[in-house]
Length: 290
Image 1 (cartoon, rainbow, N blue to C red):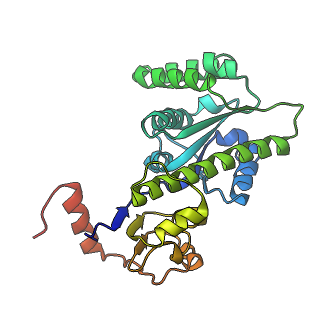
Image 2: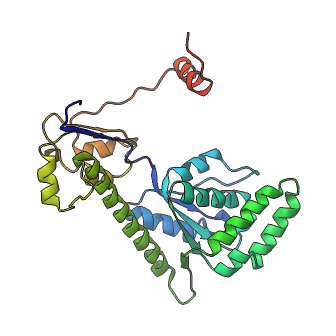
Image 3: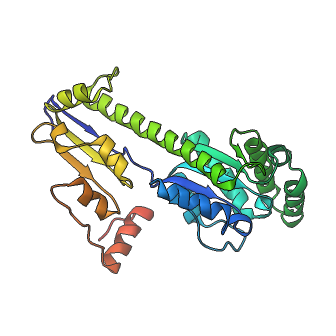
């Protein structure tokens, strides 16, 4: 693709989930959080909800990875949230990615006062005091938790009310997330088209964009696509691009490729154990294979 009429773009879908749900299982797993999860999924919002009972002191690394691969995080701050080390570690990680990766964090103050969360009063104050007694050897970790709670208590979010039906409350949250995701995808489209067309002042009118792309030979790589709306927005139809253009899509969901009507599907074969170990050794320990 060396000609002046070709352009390329990659890594436009590096996330895996639209939303990561952080919650205290014993408070809301089978009630509010479960209902919120189902409502998000019903809107086509890919949501990560940990379905494992949390035991032990250290958070599962898979959860930290899921946070990093999520575009948004919803934090359900309930009465016993701060009594869980895992929840507090999740909160710290979520707020870190909010800064470093510009991901959105949305606190839900579920039957708790935002001021009590931020100032560690009530159940949050008691929980942090108990954590300090148990973790006298790791006060740095407790300090990070306190700072994270102070920060999240000041953030704009949603607060439950006894005067509002829970179904309405959930609908309000889902609508907000859905609108924000739609805006993000449109911004992604503008970014892609700006690169392909080498034009910083893109007119998002569909007809003019399609007319200009029709004569372009492009190479576009969409890595780890997880939602049909991403493919529809970024690559539209085959007629959008000029002859000899190539669109490469990687995904865990073969159905997405079928719905999109791709010309060919290549399924990566799983390595045999010996080859997998050799590949891991090569990258993890920088060892050259024999």
